[in-house]
Image 1: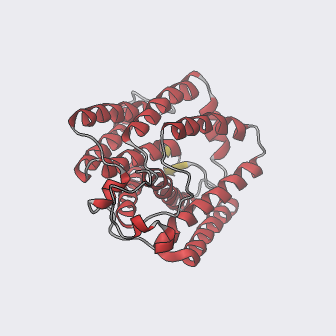
Image 2: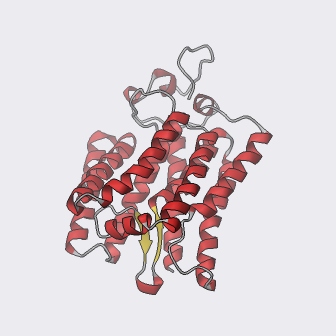
Length: 301
């Protein structure tokens, strides 16, 4: 039951992210197309942030999680319910997450439910920020390869990730989707949820929804394999899910690259990918109308 709840949360994150991509456009600063340099920057943050959090007081780490989490949830919801509605929902969810954590504890079922909802919204916002910014399948494959290597070192060769999750599991906006307790506990880290959600989403933009379904099946299949390993007693400790998800993403990427070129984000919109935008002032005129001018001097995403 616990594993089904966690997998259900990941499936919900994937489905919600794809629906969001098809219907809404996020308000993003004009920083250009997401490219390989951004992947390098993300990789640096992945390395540096856990180390920094291990050396900061718990209340500072919890405050950072709460502020950044609430801000990204608001950014995600504004195109859906407007600025005022997005602010109200994000603040309500953020306050509830912090209050339940402090009042009932971070291992209560209510906290897992509220925190899980917050994490799913964070995944919708984070992945759409990248994909709507023009992230390509090659960028995701590169990130997946890095995360596989990083997880092997940080989780198995070093105790860093074990120490990190042991430190943050009692904090608001803890970066773990979990359900159950004791021997019936099932959990998955934020980075693994991110990759499981990001790959199907970028495939929706780059290729087709059928390829996205295949990508989702591959990433979710990695999580199922881990669960089977625990059930059979083959696995009995913290396992980096990326060692299952990453190779599946890389193999799928290589197969698709041989088959056909991928669409840019502008081409995705031109062929009917975007059915709705929230407000004309949140997006450029090119995106607000849902059209694409091939002669435009604006960079394709």
